[in-house]
Length: 333
Image 1 (spheres, rainbow, N blue to C red):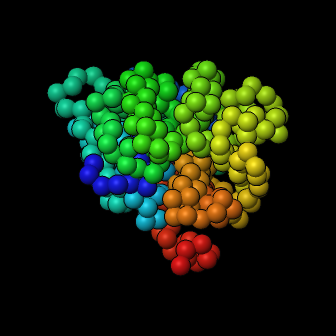
Image 2 (cartoon, one colour):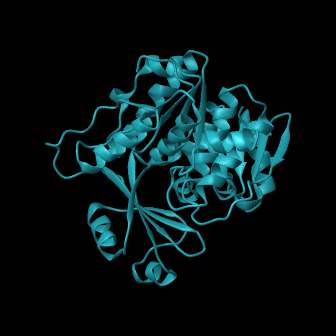
C-alpha cells in the first residue's frame, strides 16, 4: 500500500452464497434464525447441498463497508486473507473492480485443507438472514499481513468485530491499532453480531474503552455489550465509554452519540427484501460522510441511505450506483 487512504478496513474475506428459503428449511437443517453461526467445512458442504438455487456474491462485513466507501469515491483499502482458489479470485476481482485497494498476499494453492471463506446466507420471506460461516483461511490473517505505515497514514482504521474469534487476527488488530494511534489517527470498531459479542465481551469492552474512537453496532449488539435489555441503558453506557457511537435500530434509523450530543437519524424509506449487509453499508455511508468533512447528521443520513439501498435486494453489495443515489437525494453534488 503506497497511497494514503481515508479508511483501511480489516476483516474476514468471505464470499456469500445466498439463497431464499422457507422457515421450514431452517428447522429441517438445524439453522438458528437471524444470527451468525460458525461452521466447519463439512457443515458448509452439507448446507450447500441442501440449499436450492443460490447466488455467489463477494461479502465479508468490513469488506462490504470498504466496497461501499470505494463506490462513493472514498479512498479505501481492505486487508483480508483468501486462498489462491476460485472463490479467492472472485473476491479479489470484485473488491478491486469497485476501486478499493486489496493487496493482502493470498494463501498458496499448495495449502491443504482450508479454502477461501464462504458464508451460507439463508434469507426467509420476512427478509431476515441466517448466516452460517466457514472461515477457512480468513482466520489466518496475522500481523505479517499488516502494513503499519499504511495504518499510520490512513485517517481511519476500521476493525470488524467478527475477527475477534481468531487469535491471529487479534494480533493483526493490535499491530494496526498501535500504528494508527501512534500517528494520531483514529480507530473504528463494529460489534458485528450479538453472539460474537457474547463470546468475546471482555475483549470488546477493552477495545471500546481503550483503543476505539468510534463504535458501530445495532441495538441488539450494543445491548449484548453492556448486558442489558434496555436500549436506553446501553446507549448511555456507550456514551460514557467512547467518543462517538453510531447505533442502528433497523427500520427506525440510527442514533448518533457523542459525550455532548445525541441525535436520531431516520431510516431511508425503502422496501425490505434482505437485511444482509445493512449495518456494513451504514458504516460505509457514515465513514464517507466523516472523511469528507460532513456534520454528524449528514453522515448519519448518508449511512441510512446506503443501508436502505442494500435492503431492497438480495446480497450485501450495492446494486444501484451509490453516487447517483446520493446525488438524487441531495447528499452529493
